[in-house]
Length: 270
Ligand code: HEC
Ligand code: HEC
Image 1 (tube, rainbow, N blue to C red):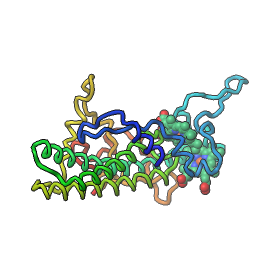
Image 2 (image 1 turned 60 degrees about the vertical axis):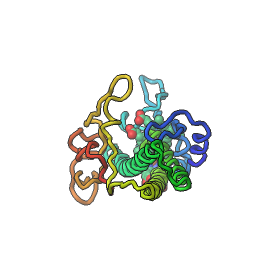
Image 3 (image 1 turned 120 degrees about the horizontal axis):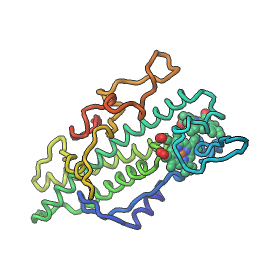
Image 4 (image 1 turned 90 degrees about the vertical axis):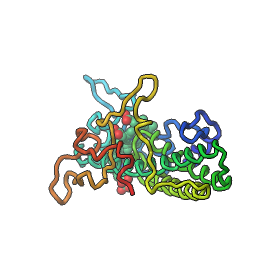
């Protein structure tokens, strides 16, 4: 992960509109995440074991060569090693992804908060104020550490499944970096006489509506709420001690899991 981030830094490809920083991109770091001591890597499982299970059509053995979600073929590739049955296994995948999503939201909102403070600070600077350069530069370094960690996990397409512990470590670090960046920015802004409210307004509507040439609008059905928000009922998996409903996770109908929504401005995270 550190090498992937170092490489992204070397080739800035776009300008972040809120902070004005030139940043790099991270593309498909599945192999990096998976091979970094994940349980399945350690057990010698290959990508294809899960993603291209053999199927028999008439008497010919064929392998599906598209990297598709194993959830879309009944988890066939898993069952040889995990006889628990697809329902239980599906629940375990969602359970890992829910935890990752909760951390993604916390890290993402934390990083966005720092970005909005940079926006305020840069506006003041453009109007003639002189921010403390040491605080600014250190906040920027920490912000970028947080930013690339968020990007690493969300551009990896398994939402944590390929390596749950490592994804959590990376996102935990992102949360810590973002919080530290926010603290330094608050200090710099206070020195400039700028009052920053306890809850920074992320102005999300500005970013989620009218995106791109096609003017895409925010669609509440596509929102992933924090699965551990107090507004979301706790889940119990199949086979757990307490009787429970069906596994939910990402498969649950939109609306059922929805908390107050993106427009509220912040996730459930403190
Ligand atoms: C132990 C089984 C397993 C192994 C090994 C594995 N994956 Fe996955 N992969 C999954 C699961 C489960 C998902 C989550 C699917 C979902 O969320 O719908 C996933 C998701 C993905 C996705 C996104 C697919 C989609 O349609 O959403 C890609 C791409 C991917 N894996 C690539 C890889 C690559 C490349 C490797 C090897 C470096 C690999 N996987 C190894 C189980 C595995
Ligand atoms: C080639 C055998 C093999 C295949 C195929 C396989 N697994 Fe595993 N799986 C393992 C082994 C071995 C472990 C590690 C067990 C341990 O460390 O106790 C494991 C661990 C797990 C864990 C626990 C991981 C954790 O971090 O706690 C889950 C969940 C899991 N597998 C789900 C899946 C799913 C879903 C698939 C298919 C998409 C799959 N496995 C495919 C062998 C396999």
